[in-house]
Length: 121
Image 1 (tube, rainbow, N blue to C red):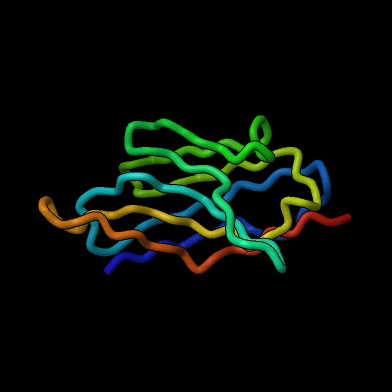
Image 2: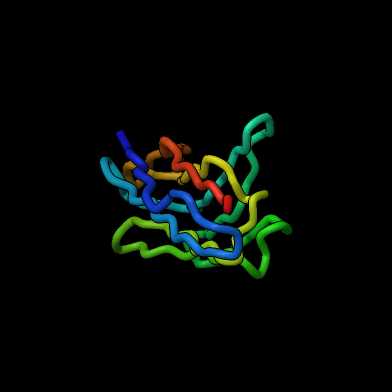
């Protein structure tokens, strides 16, 4: 089994910054794509950003230039640096990862439990 544990959420004023972290643990041989999703009240969950095992990144248009995703493969951790936050960024942020638990095992998708980010004055 694999666990993804997020941290770093909280309350921040508009224009402020937060850094989210997500650490993977458990039965892990390798991790392919890691990403961050968010879900605001009454809205569908959306991809915010993801990063491949090779370091290629992808962002939703609304966060380009403000958010930066990165990963430390040795620590099995993915980060999301969020700058210039605005109230529209308020949501529960979820970590996601495609994990292989053995050399010939299939990729399995896992989710974290989510961390609340609230942007308000």
